[in-house]
Image 1: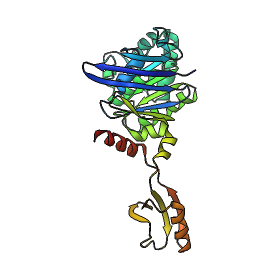
Image 2 (image 1 turned 135 degrees about the horizontal axis):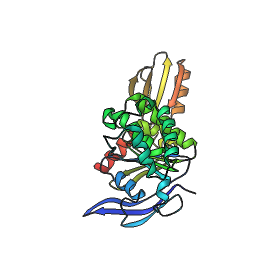
Image 3 (image 1 turned 90 degrees about the horizontal axis):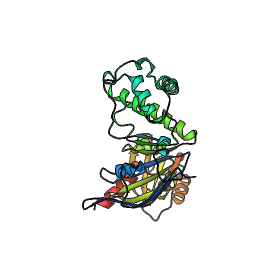
Image 4 (image 1 turned 90 degrees about the vertical axis):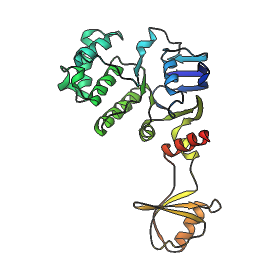
Length: 298
């Protein structure tokens, strides 16, 4: 059973089409990246998944059914706009919000202490929310999102404003959720985080799907005509190379489109150059993102 199945959803606000005939699915046991520039339709899509707003047309199925009130307890949602009761203490906040998801007080307190301990927040359980730093507040919000053991977790910009230590902590917890067989939808602007965590991605722009599928397959599709080379010897003016880009510890050689990497490697070896590293350059997700979004803005 798929965790999420979206078929041809459309959503307009006044004369602006926010989501335009979008279809995708999310499997259980995967981290799925939902990415795109500001105003691309990501948050509108998430709100339709959550049944906060209804699509004008198309269908959304969550955990095998249309989202009922009872089924909403199987979801965990971390919205981009954070919202905790500032005057409430940390533990009381977690227990209260867990009760809204059907947890009894004893189970909620037990699980809260476990998660507070896991995140290093146990010493702060008695503090008021307003006494916490922004990052600490975000950790509490993440705890609230997963405390009721949801099968589908939707995280909208979970790393915004977090320091590197807490970013790594949350990334580790996302991996744990995946390893438990849960589905995680991650919407984030930090492409390096998406690239590190996600199995598959959907890139949207102007409400439409631009890229969709397995991240490794997408990256291999965008392999360019360049190789990364770490060598000993004198490179000189090798034919077939139109540009050399010096990086720390290696050089990137951009080929002319006629010379294959294999031909280049054979020529370098025949000239007695010692090759320590020779590989096809694969673009980062950030480079692919900039290329696709830039293409759509022309």
